[in-house]
Length: 363
Ligand SMILES: Nc1ncnc2c1ncn2[C@@H]1O[C@H](COP(=O)(O)OP(=O)(O)O)[C@@H](O)[C@H]1O
Ligand SMILES: [Mg+2]
Image (cartoon, rainbow, N blue to C red; front, side, top):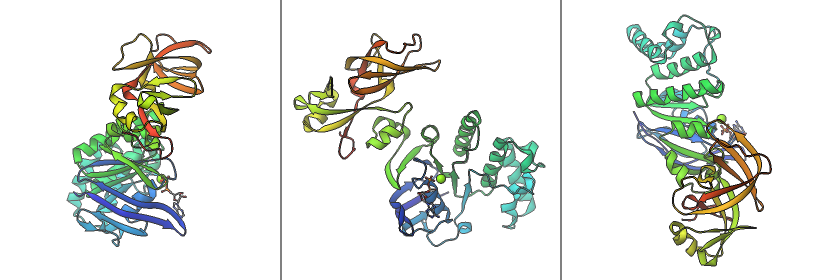
């Protein structure tokens, strides 16, 4: 077992800087998710940890060993790819055994490891099949099994569930998380899917354009996004943003056509930033129908409905107020029609404030 430490890690392809200066510490036994939009450098970061890509600056350590110059096979890691990368001409059993055979493990030990992993993953009845005779989900299990039997210090996963259908993805997500809790092997898991990141990661590192924007537990990212990017990336439907100015010495937030009062809980922040242009963030789940139970101080506002999306357990309402389009998650008992005026309340204590220029969180 071992932690993984990245210090000042940089990656350049010719003149293009893909990873600028990445500091990240993954603790021993931790499940860390790297999440960010496509092209932000997630796979590159993972491949550098695996040794499949050279680093152009900084150091990577696995345990207390700097591995910058170690070839992949000596890093004690096992990687699972989106493409599964199984050997097509080998049976499932041979695929699982392969890495152990080339390391000359005694056959009795190989048998034990393979049978145990196959059982854990529920693929013991498939051991004599070839990959082409398996479903996508079964192939993915074999790929995971191949990583497990090697008993590495670190698992690296690169979007392993992207090729599966939505339902299977949810199921495998839970299975991989459970498996990791059982094995306690340090894991770095890459995905572009924020729901996957939030549900699987003990901690989540959010990347954008090769920059680490924030690292924290899922609830830390949700409750205290450090900047506008993380605020907009985490949560579905995404957080609403209202351009406003902190007015009246910090007592109000003045949007283009309406004003929100600042609750007592946020006054220390707004008092220090009076006159500043801000983006006010409010999550759809903190905008409720007038009359329902709310928490803390609230403000009333009326929206004109542009779209209502009934999802069964809730209805997602897109409504206009002033120049702003606000999305709210409402109780589904009544689905408003296009153009309806709906009275809503905002839970003011859950507002997030970001500097309009720097995009950093205030307070
Ligand atoms: N071998 C390469 N040569 C040049 N550019 C590359 C190479 N590999 C990746 N890139 C670039 O690096 C950026 C990050 O890629 P990648 O790490 O694959 O992103 P992600 O996995 O987050 O989608 C992209 O802009 C990609 O085009
Ligand atoms: Mg990738």
